[in-house]
Image (tube, rainbow, N blue to C red; front, side, top):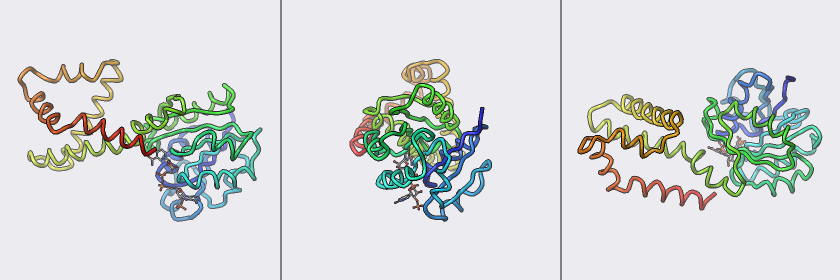
Length: 260
Ligand SMILES: NC(=O)c1ccc[n+]([C@@H]2O[C@H](COP(=O)([O-])OP(=O)(O)OC[C@H]3O[C@@H](n4cnc5c(N)ncnc54)[C@H](OP(=O)(O)O)[C@@H]3O)[C@@H](O)[C@H]2O)c1
């Protein structure tokens, strides 16, 4: 397989994470562009990634351009890119939450285009990636999805469901982190150090996810197998539900989805 030249545009949280994920792919040669130098300095070195503030140098000859700038800047940056690349050689991949395939298509009419919604765990190959595309051949899709798997599993989803998917996959990092933060408060109140509590809560989350994935079980089955009748776990769980644990999560997700 030939080396694939990739340009990642935007060295913010998601651009940096996507770059770190892609950079471990053995056939990828990644250039990270940012309009200003500061974030590139912060990014540092990663598996031979080239960093630059020169957009033309970043995108010229690139087979894939991952656009990771903030929403309102996506179309202006794409407008600049299409001056330096041609549809026969380059595929556009937008990681923006709020820009649709139709809007991207208007700015780059003849290009194959994909939307990829990663989360920040892309940096360590553990992102949940949402994917949809326009004007891509099955071969192009296959290669791109293989490439994106370097940052974590890829789930193909109709674009209409991206907002909902994102609430779980991208926003989900913040929700899970807040759960761990709350466990730290509880753990400290019960006499653990904050770091002991954080570690135990994170390991419990990791174990839960691994069990669900391994067995394909429903979460309620795991709950049943942990809750001894009249025991400690169910007492805690019921007390959490009395304070709105599950409804709070559903309410938060519905609120977030309305804002995408
Ligand atoms: N964070 C997430 O978990 C997540 C998940 C999925 C998708 N996304 C999407 O990823 C994109 C970036 O989000 P982020 O969280 O990485 O934001 P961020 O950390 O604030 O980074 C924003 C990036 O956009 C660049 N930028 C802003 N205005 C620009 C302009 N006019 N021209 C060129 N570059 C410009 C910034 O460059 P400077 O350094 O020069 O300001 C920076 O590289 C968004 O479209 C978001 O929807 C984010």
